[in-house]
Image (tube, rainbow, N blue to C red; front, top):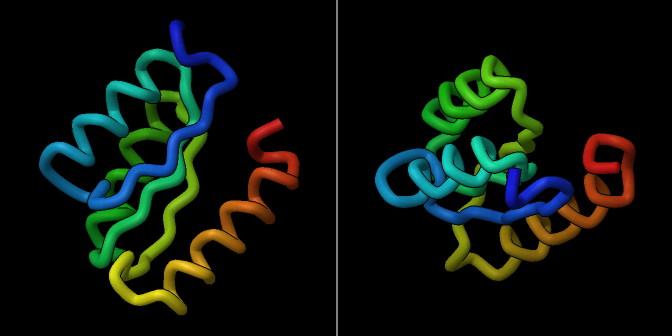
Length: 86
């Protein structure tokens, strides 16, 4: 559990390298915020992580769009300030 109590924000998380990073991070005890354009794939990955006992928050956002990024950052801030990651 090398990453216990650590939080990663992973963009492009719904597939490929992002998904692999998310699963590895959780396997090592970390908590993840998954960001991707595809909300359906995010939900699938979220369920997979939760079934393994992982802590996960998903955000569907386009990281190229500044207003969506601002919303994502605000949600991450609210989440980190809340009990889910404490």
